[in-house]
Length: 306
Ligand code: HSE
Image (cartoon, rainbow, N blue to C red; front, side, top):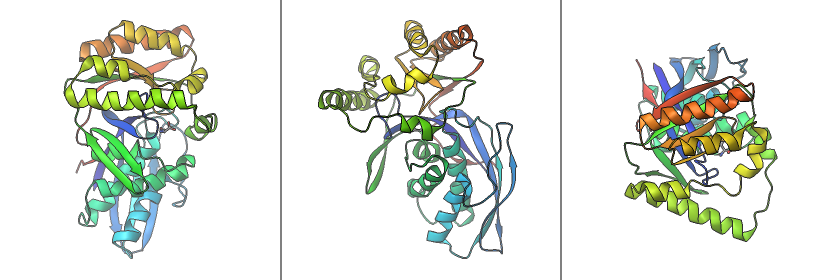
């Protein structure tokens, strides 16, 4: 079985660790087959983006699939082939896409014993080995698709947020690497109450704007007063790129996940292309090459290819 799971934009400005949406592309592909040997093994990894561990205890894909099998089909064996089709440490949810694809493949081969949403908790374990934190804001949209909210981590409660279908995004990946683990270490541990209040308002406003297709509420709510100011200093030209994307008509622009990719959420493909060009031009001025992805919000998430 061959499975695809998409890249994702996590946080979506104000929703640190709780909001995310899926892209049409890029994404990772995992081939999986059942084996008579219990446990999960990795047979092959194809990646032009650096080495990934073959040790099943260290690879995000095998960890996620093994946790799923342990719960639903202990004794079943699985052999994985991972095709990385996006850069690691990019802010595109690279580790999440591999975990999502592997757990979804395991779920299919095991006869679909649970819902797609139930797979999120296993894929989160893959995130924990990849970056030391079991956040779900990349794995949830990669598995389920669409725009997702992690309403609660304990117990895990994932919800899908309705969104206007015309939304498009530009995600620009500059060729620098920021490991999520490092980008989490720079964050302060305490948040002043006034910042928390501003952020709560933006999260609620963004969700309401998405549900009611209110572009001006979406635009005004795409503002992160807590995380972006701390992380954006790691990305040369960030503020200039953000201003340029908004001038090009984007509803908002912020870091994609923990960066260094930047996303701009837009009301049309045309605006997304223009915003993407502006962001890429700023990176070019900084002497940094970049790749731009233009995408709608992928409402399917992980899927079987063949
Ligand atoms: N919410 C996570 C973070 C996403 O910002 O650290 C990482 O892709």
